[in-house]
Image 1 (cartoon, one colour):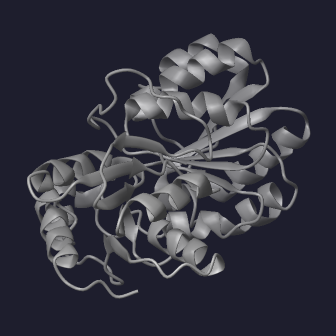
Image 2 (image 1 turned 60 degrees about the vertical axis):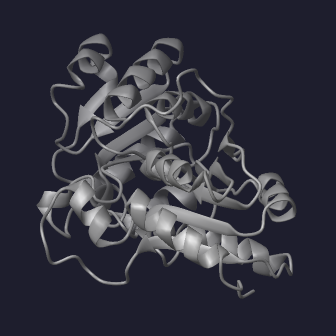
Length: 309
C-alpha cells in the first residue's frame, strides 16, 4: 500500500499544484522521486509529528492541500491534540496518512502497533476515516481524498500487501464495496484484513454463504449497504486489525442502536490489552484469533447456535 500511495500522490501532485507532502523523518528512498519532481512541495520536518500537523494546518489555511505521513501511532496518537484543534476545528483539508495499520510493524512492539487509531480519528468532528483494503483501493482512495477538501485520515498497511482487486473497482468515499456475494451472513471488513475475510469466506463456502463487504470508509459509514446486509443476511460479523473498542465493530453497533435494529452483530478485533510478545504480523494476528481459520471457525459456530440479539 505504501508504494501505491506515493504513486497516486505523485499523479495527484502533477495535476494539482496545491498538493504538498510532509514527512516526519521517514521514507527517504520511496519519496526521492516526489522530492525531485516537486522540490518546493516536499518537507521533512524531522521527528516532530505534532509540529508537522501545525505546519500542515497553516499551509492548508494558506490554500495548500497537505498530506502528512508517519507510522500510524506517531501520525495520530502522538499529535492528537494538534489534529483536533488545528485541523478538525478549523475544518481544513489536511490528510493524515498513517502507514503500518494493525500489526504491520509487529516486531517493533506495542509502541509501533496501531490498534487504537480508528477509534481516535473517527471520534473527531469533521474527520473522514478511510482504510483501503489493498494497493488498488489505496490509489483510488488518494484521488478520492484529493477531491474531498476536508480533514481526512488515510490508514495504510506497509509494503507487500496482497492485491485483491484484479481490476479497479468503483470507489467512492462513504460507499462500501461488496467483494463477494452471499446470503447467510455478512463478513464486513476494513483495511488490510480484506484478504483474510475472503479466505475465511472461501473456507466456509461449502456450508455457509458468506457475503464479504469491504467498508473502506469507517466514517462516514455506508448506511445503504448496512441496511441491505440486515435485510438480506442473517448476521453481520465485523473484522478489523484494531481494538474491538471504537473501531468498525463499534461503529456498526452504534448504527444499529441509532436505528433501533435488533440484529445479530459479532466483532472480530484485538483484545483490550497490550501485546507483550514480539512477532510477525501473521503471528500476532493468529495470537489475537484474527487468522482466516479462527474467523471461519467462529462464524460457523455462531451460525449453528441460537444468535442473541
